[in-house]
Length: 314
Image (cartoon, rainbow, N blue to C red; front, side, top):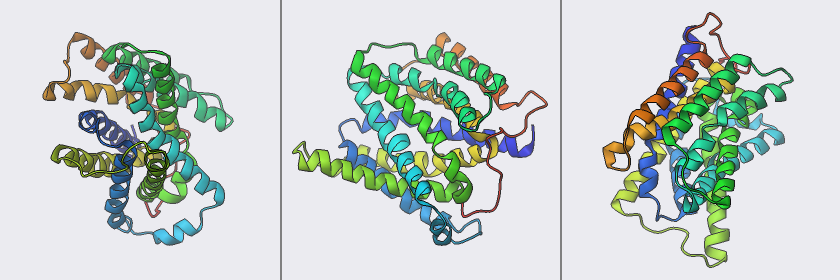
């Protein structure tokens, strides 16, 4: 495997492991206002990313942003709305009437959808190896989590969460090249913070649905800080850095590590167990990731949809 592709695979794996481990923080924020929490998380993450934008040299971020077209800004708005704010809203809504395993299993199917959608959008045929690997990852995710109790709204919201996960990868492809991982992460976090704030004003304030924000407890404050500084700042930059090197198709395979990481960390806080089923599922996910990313094969170069590694503001 080429060094560039190996580094991309490791970055994508690390990012998805962080996301899986963050589910514990999500449980702490169950009673915190949704929109206000999202606005705080993404707003803080955007501020934390600002000092990193000039660390790699290259053009000034403001100069790069001036080159973006209306279509680019539309993509960024959709990426923030669908892949970030919308995804989290769908998961939260699904878990009101469905067990957490249900949205988890649906999100585990994201590699299959991305493996088909990205090649179709680029006018080429899906790679058979990637699709087979995506199938293994999806089966492994199902084995890790099982299928929980749900109703129709819970199932529909879980499908919405799947759409958000797919959008987080697919919508980023055209804007990753001009912005780079760091600037892309900062911009979408800022946009998502504004969108979440507007959502909170619309539904929590104007509709009389309750408070948009409140002072968090000590546990909630730590959870928000973890989500912003670790999962968002570090996780997003690692994810998009990995995707730039190996492409959206192969990078999304690593989303199968999210339920594995969640299952591994759940016993640490007493919210779950890790048994033989989780072990078998983890092995299936690992096998799918290894086969799809090309670690064992001679054709282990970058995915055909990978973005060339160039010097940008990211």
